[in-house]
Image 1: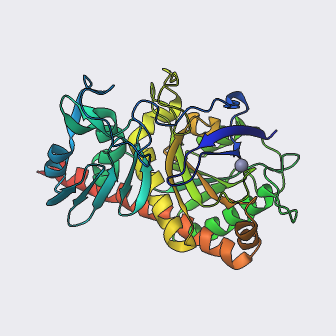
Image 2 (image 1 turned 90 degrees about the vertical axis):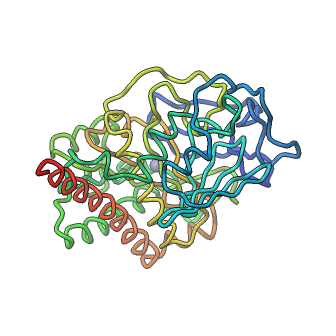
Length: 364
Ligand SMILES: [Zn+2]
């Protein structure tokens, strides 16, 4: 059964808007009606006030100062203004907003767990973001040495009595997801991977059954494919979710919300999840030319219970007239499918590279 979540989404330069989007866990349907800012502790980065100066709410937390981070990750140039920063290296460019939770790595938006804030007197990243968000993106091979790289499980969202989102013209999310998943399978099979789908037809599957099937097939990677919907028909774009970290808030919650302290099975892959999510979002954006809604974190049940590194992609909004029309076109679904396959392949190449490094290191 489709659960709907009413969340407050903050868009830079635009007033806050409320939107619905489909959610994976019937256990996690919340109604978030309070009109607090998503950045209550720090102020919205796009607001009229300058970002906070020391002392701030994060002043006593340990963190890595931006300049220290830039040096240790090989960024040779760093520019700062009162509100923003930008680091440039040979492979990566990293920019972001002081006081905000968003950074852009090679122009792909990533949502941090905690804002860039003044910690112990310096503008800093929280340690959890250095270790669990940024390092897995900038140095993925470091985390992927023991991971498998052959079996891909694709999970077309919804199915059967659960249509998911439906466009004004009657296009169902369950049909879009299945069509794209079948196309992704074709590309990955041609590239030599072993690919399973949690469903091959218009069939209802419980949320528990999806990761369970992936476990039975010994998945090395699990990707759930969905389309978005909103009561605001101007909401558009592509986003990728990975599992929220234990003890940290999910992206769509206020930093003042009480985070779950629980660890889930999917948290065994925190670093790989982020490497996979980044590869998928980067690849889909390049192909679709859509608005970048970022790599986000959530506790959807398919991510919580995933038996392997996992991500959930939202390929566009069925509630947005132009995106719904695009999703109705086979050529667009094929472009998206190619890009999802490419993102998975990019991630699995990193896994193979990591295995090679590990083998070389053991011979030294
Ligand atoms: Zn969905």
